[in-house]
Amino acid sequence: MIPLLHRTVHPEWIDYNGHMSEAFYVLAFGHATDALMIEAGLHSAYRESTGCSLYTVESHLRFLRDVPEGAHLALRTRVLGAAARKARFTHEMYVVQNASGTPAPDAEPVATTELLALHVDQRASRATEFPPAIRERFVELTEPAPEWAGRSIAAVG
Image 1 (cartoon, one colour):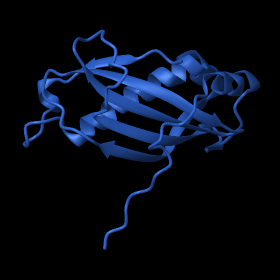
Image 2 (cartoon, rainbow, N blue to C red; image 1 turned 180 degrees about the horizontal axis):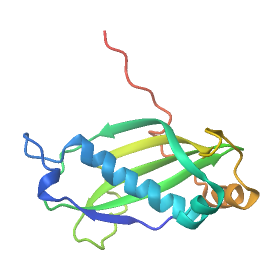
Image 3 (cartoon, one colour; image 1 turned 180 degrees about the vertical axis):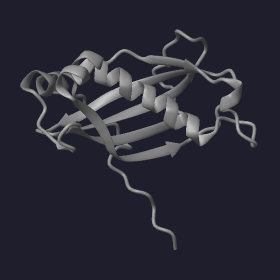
Image 4 (cartoon, rainbow, N blue to C red; image 1 turned 45 degrees about the horizontal axis):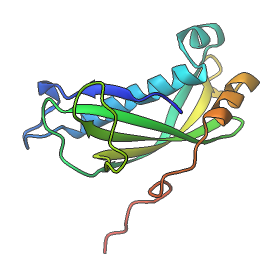
């Protein structure tokens, strides 16, 4: 299991409606992706030595509840699977009682995102296979998908 990432909602993250702006949900989830990359071995030394990194190519973000200024966030990451060149994972955002807290077992997320990412060789500008150790680490980190993962946006009409 990947450790929880903690953040606090800053005043500049609040929009004209008085709650966290959508751009900052993406920022917090981006920090969770960075933490996943470190956990999987795709850290800065790896990127510098190989010229490879993880690029998000698709995401599905759900805003479930308003988040106020000063809220303490806990972000939970789950790897859902990895193939030769890609990884699928989710992040769930929770409001917790303090900056080092964990969500209660029955806590509902305030936002979720599901992402598909490619391992990209930046020098060649193309997707490339994960090294075996990185792919094995993703396999070790794989968990069952939450019930909401894999959904699409509802049609209008």
